[in-house]
Length: 357
Image (cartoon, rainbow, N blue to C red; front, side, top):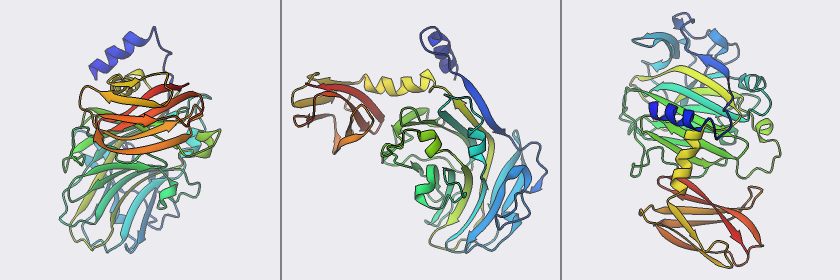
């Protein structure tokens, strides 16, 4: 973190000042210990405006949702079960007013930063249990339909696999760049998760201090909207655990603390630098190009996919590769102009410009 601070200070004179506006901050320390809510049907809100919901095959109970005391952290929000969770049963705590918070941002602050401290819980022997942290954009608060999910952190409770998904996100995003093939978190451990939604440039950045990584991916790349942050505004914040295909009788415990939502006018330089650093490792030649362009690197970084985008952000062509460190791309049929190459690797996504003659 000290490196990041020094880097930011050094860039103040050559880059625009990042204007940060905290829209929501919650550490639960002002909440009363005990049940978070009184209505497990999700109709009436409980403490702090949180709704609690038992759905699927899960019997309604307030005992799944509690404010508990945690050593060295104060109060935290805890989702837990000491009873049987039936097959296809789900419990969730959620807020459905995130859009009103986003509406309070200063005009032009179209980068939304979300961060949270998350306790991974114990390992479970069954294969059908998953924990989710979800940002959704559905006005009715329905986050269960995949198309209503902007960002979804998912932890597999048997193996500790941490994955991310979301609307129009690129596939195979590895938060741990050294992982093969899964990014694994330790069980019963607090970790910090940070994500930047850059609506100006259709990019998302996942910062995971546990892995010491920042990973960039395309975001809302298939949308033709001219006002993305209004049309895909974060509305719902939800925490869930679910029994997908088998009944569990083991305790499921997840905890959440130090939630913060911030609006910024730009992605911080140290975050962008992580992506730019990867891009510097790739060579694209010839450039300008008439037909065949070669993309290569000298560090054996495996290329998994290349997407060609026009200057409006529309994907023109997409090709998959088998972790090759040198590929050739035929742009002979493309119209003259500038294009962006999104080079997706196991270390993240590098963006290079190429000019077609």
